[in-house]
Image (cartoon, rainbow, N blue to C red; front, side, top):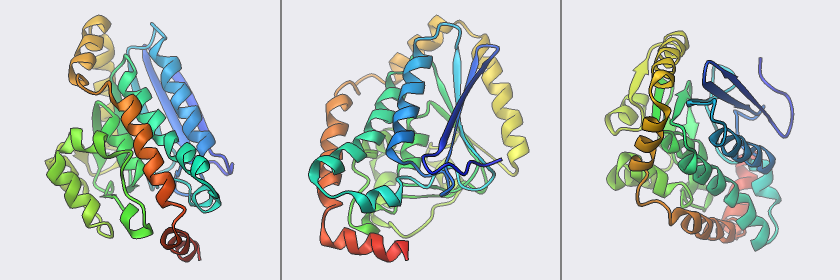
Length: 255
């Protein structure tokens, strides 16, 4: 079942110390501002819930995991403040995931673009299907993957980030992403993916939560400055989205 709500949907469910966050949007699970805000709040709330030992992040349906930013909202941006505010949405989510006390498992069932790649990179452990190709298409519309770059580069290295970002019109398949560390395991079917994620989440949930929280702190050392850095990057994107090049590219894409 996929949502038809224009602002998207977000559901959180906790069972046996495993919390699942599921987001959805009729436009290939893309993100309008309101949905980014709700996702940020969901991570912040779960982070402070002692009964939660592990979090699974997933999206609705069997096709795209996430198509990145909402094109409708990108087109509607008319000034610098609006632009900075919109791109800060992804900055806030990545920072919430980074600060979140519990490990986050990403379930990537299909194609992932732009900000969606950033979300996958901000997970602590990702599993995917063979259909989970990735692309950073931002340069094709006159902006860049600036906000998500620190998260993606941290996970796959600068060289692999450059391979994605410069070749903005090309998809990289799930095995390419696995070889570079974005995905840990790749499965043929969604059924296999879900089975393994459940087993892995149960294992993590059974470990000492104090140990897993310390483990998470260790792996994110050196990222505290992201609170400011990602907002600064959001301002860069917010300025570029007002350019004539980007406005024309977005309208062309929309048609």
